[in-house]
Length: 214
Ligand code: HEM
Picture (tube, rainbow, N blue to C red):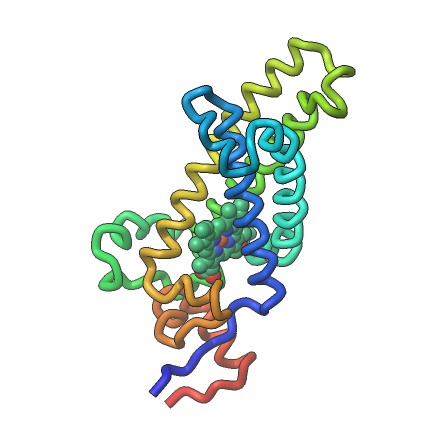
């Protein structure tokens, strides 16, 4: 028998998320290709060197706009609360001992680790957009002083590094915590997943979605 499920994401929220992922992958591929000659071969994946250079800024803007949609939907649920520090204190144990560790009972829809990831995504994308515009040759660079463009290029690379590291942590956690990918693919999670990883959210949803506990 299929275990009872709790709705976690609507179809619109999931489509929004996967559009961010598509833009991220294409912007990262074209960005890496522009970053270092050793990675020039990546231009073949986006239609050649000219296309890599033309498309990269537009892909970055598209990612920012799609992410803004997610930000508007999820920022409130990612605000830092007292219990998130409690979750972070158990994070080391969660990593080493997995499901045996009792997650703090007040953990809501997102835990402290997910919230840090959310704000790291947000900050790095803001810095990437703001700095990228300053040295976008096709539109704005000609009116920006060269020293400022150099600072912008450096900050752009640092923010990209932070974004890619955050992405690796995010994907690793999504795959490593069994049952989590299902939330972003099919929209739902099992009652057991919710009760274990997000106990407060579980209790709220049981009431809101009218599910009777045995
Ligand atoms: C292959 C790449 C990716 C995979 C497999 C993936 C997977 C997931 C999964 C499974 C969730 C649901 C987590 C939960 O509900 O507990 C999620 C949520 C989310 N993802 Fe991704 N993701 C990917 C890439 C990205 C990228 C590139 C971004 C942004 C730049 C992103 C931003 C988010 C956000 C904002 C959430 C909502 C969670 C929150 O607000 O803390 N994801 N992702």
